[in-house]
Amino acid sequence: MEKIKTERPRCFDGIERNDCGVHSLAALLAIPYGDARELLAKAGREPRRGTWPRQMIAAAMLGGHELRECTRPRAHGLTRYGFARRVSALRVLEYVPARGHYLISTSTHWFAIVDGVVYDNGGLRDRARLDSIYKLSI
Image (cartoon, rainbow, N blue to C red; front, side):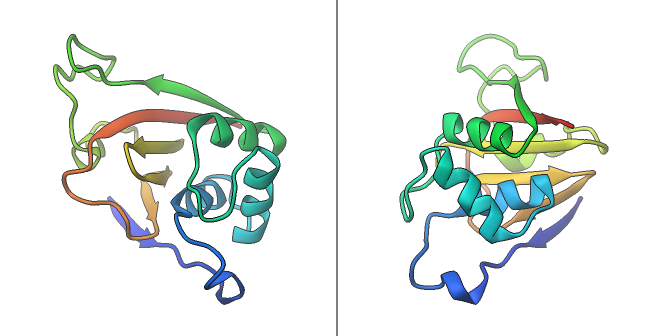
């Protein structure tokens, strides 16, 4: 899969961090970083505080879209993708369909996959464990 590193606009340097959710929402909805930041702020996200799943879902709804959770890997038992244990977020890229808009969350990070292209601001580590996969309904 192709990977694209997203960048924060210079006007937000120094006033924003922990903004992987903003980058991901912007890539997922194909909107500017500032607009994604506004949607998340309306959904309850505070600057420099990161993004919770409920805030991401609410922000997508404010943008006129629906995010639905595809799977939440469990420590025990099989999931829809057939994993017996929690797997790394990078490993699950093999199983995400090539077409569609997906939002992937780990315990500490968000990134987007849009039509087979990974959009990330560089915070994804090789060993990050997958938390949830969300699909955007357009």
